[in-house]
Amino acid sequence: MKALKILGMVLCLSGCIYAGEFSVLPWRDDVVAGLSGYQIEYLDRQSEKLLKTEVLQESSFKANKLLTAFKGYTIVDTKSYSKNYYVQESLVAPESAQLISGYAPASVEGGKKYDIIGQVDIQDKLYYVLASGKPTYVFLADENYVLQDHIATIRDDKLVMIEGKFVITPENFKFEPITKSRIVQSDMVTGFEIKYQGIQSGAMVFSLMEYDAGGQTGEFINYSFENKPGVIEIAGIRIKVFYANDSKLEYMIIVK
Image (tube, rainbow, N blue to C red; front, side, top):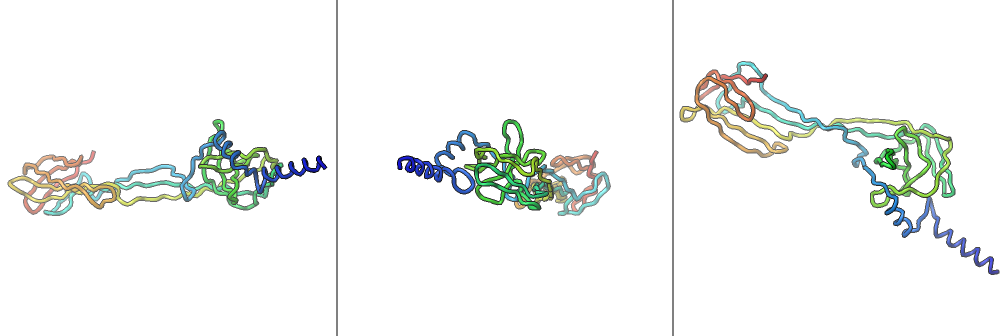
């Protein structure tokens, strides 16, 4: 009878330790998370990774050509935009696979797409974190997309390895990568506009409007120059003046 009681206690403890996919002892999981958690570098909400950003310049003037602008008209209009290049990576299982261990088994469904939600560095090796389709665990694949014989859970934005190795069938199962890319161009980030404002008190007058991010607001500045042929410079733009009166300006934008 005593032996039966002991056996019953062991079975009860076993039921507390394992349930569902893996260990659910809260205090023990917290300790494991603190000691062996790995920081995850997440992709953004759309599972995309920003590869690079370019800044583009767009100008309305023709360089090194004789031009005419009337009073109140723009002579130089320059805008800057940002262009972001994104890539979205997913992995496809070419066939079904099973991960078997002393815990409840896990499986990979053939033909299914598994999104890469982030990556993690473990002992100087990079691993992709794959959504398994279940809230309880994630898969890991190395840089060659080979499925790893461990699964993990995520606690406080850290990857926590679940104890025990899994036997993978078929052996050396490997995902196939799918990459999608897209380019997003922003609204105007910065820019400026130079206008000819005629002659005031014998001087040529120009106005410069420098736009803030988004092009909604800006700073307005007036510049005055002696009314004579020659080269002037505003906001880094070199302007060669040939002739100016109160109604029009004959000029050239000098670009080397």
